[in-house]
Image (cartoon, rainbow, N blue to C red; front, side):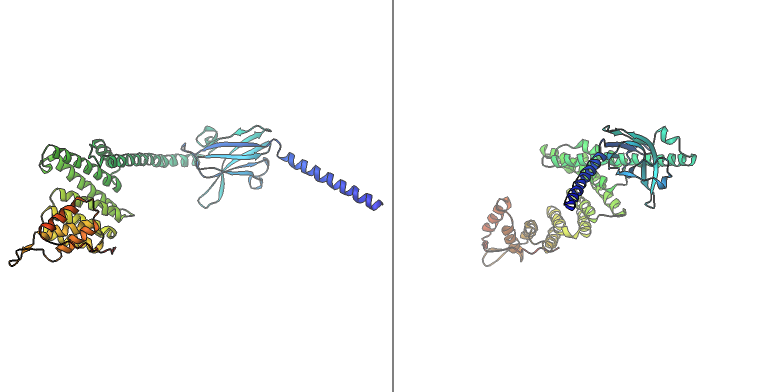
Length: 406
C-alpha cells in the first residue's frame, strides 16, 4: 500500500513539477519586444551588409560578451530583431572585413522595457559616431567619401541613361509603323552619347533614333513627290545614323566583353542605310561584316544584301547574294523572289516556237517562292500572272526545300 501511495505521490509531484517548469518557460518570453532600425554608412547611403547583435554582458571584454538576437541587415539597410527580452543591452553593428572576419563598427546602449517596441538606428555620419573615431580613421572616412561620391554620381548618370534608353526604345517602336517624327528621341540620345561617349549601346540606339527620323523625313518627301535623295536634311540623317551605328560597333569590338551579335545588328543597319543612299559596295561590305559577327542570322543579312543589289539593278550581285541567303536558310521566300526576278531579264525566245525560254534556275526560284510565300502576298498573284503570260505552267505539286542550315 505504501509503495502504491508513494508512486502516486511521486507521479503527482512529477506532474506538478512539469507544469511548473512549463509555466516558467512560458514566462521567459513575457514582455519580449521587436527592435528595428535603419543603418546609414559613412557617405549617407543605406548599409546593406552586416549584422546587429545584442549582449547583456556590458562589463565583460568584447571577446567574452555573449551575443544574442543576431539579426542581418537587409538590402534596404534595415534590420528587425524580434523576441528581444527586456533588459539593458549593448547593441553592436558588425560588418565583415576583407578577410571575411566579423568586426564591430559601432555600439549603442539600449534599455528594453516589456512590451515596448523600439527603433534604434545606426548613423555613421552622425557626430555621435564620428567623435569617437581616431584621426587616422576620420581621414580614411573622408577618402572613402570622395571615392563613394564619384561612384554614386556615376551610378546616377547610368540610371538616368538607362531610363532614357528605355523611353527612346519605346518611342521608336511606337513610331516605326507610322514613321512619326522622333526629334525628341534624337535629341535625348545625342545628350546620352555626350554624357557617356564610350558606351556602345548608346551610340547604337542613337543610330536607331537618327534612322527613324530619316525614315520620317523620307516619308514626308514622298508625300510631297520629292525624291528623298535630293533632300539634304534627309540624306544627312541617314549619313549620321550610319556613323552612329559604326561608332557603336567599334566601341563594342574594343570593349572588355565584346558582343558580336550587337555588332552584327549595327552592321546590318549600316548596310540598309547605305542601300538607301545608293552606296552599294559599302552596303555589301556592311552585310558581310554582319554575317562575320553573327553567322546564325546570315540568311537575313544576305537576304537584305540581295534586296539592295536588286533595287540597284545589279542583277548578278543580287543573284549571288540570294544564293548565299538560300544556302544558309532555304525556307525564306524573299531570296527566291529576288533571284527569279533578277534572272527573268535574261530570258530568251525560242526561234522555232517563239516561246519565252527562262534561264536555268529561274523557274525553280519562282516555284520555290510560290510554295513558301503566304497566299495573301500580293507578289504571288503577280508571279502567277507573269508565268501565265509566258505560257509557263506552274507545278502545283512543287515543294520548296525545307532544310535550314546555320
